Image (cartoon, rainbow, N blue to C red; front, top):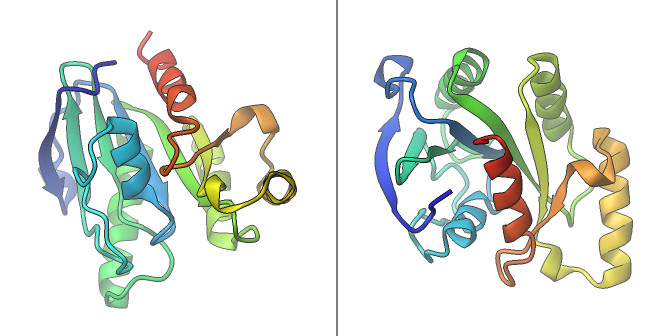
Length: 193
């Protein structure tokens, strides 16, 4: 997978704007301000390529990035707290739900979870729904650099139990150090084989 040749393709606000099914797609989902954009920038090794914001709700569409002729990376709007209207949040939910459940090119949804927090109901709901839809899911626990070794193990175990995740089904990730990047790429590449 060539992540050196990445291009922003388009931002989609309605299903009629989706690009034609073609290249395999990987969607990145997570609560608002969980570190989705930072993770994607680390994955791409391009600081600031995917816009990072301290304001929840900054990503307001499905943002498609094309990686050479290999695949598409799709940055989904964050769920949970966002400084936007309920109507806009409902529109996002409908768009995301339809995209995930109907998109043939979608190979996997990367669900990003902040390891510092207790299991959140919205994360569990998303994971359960993806499993029901039989959509491959890859949980990633971010911000691992903010915890000590003992805290990291304890928090990971709590999240695993709370979300029904096995240790070998998730990746520990740090946007600061890059830990987990190679593992993430390997999993994504396995869907391209």
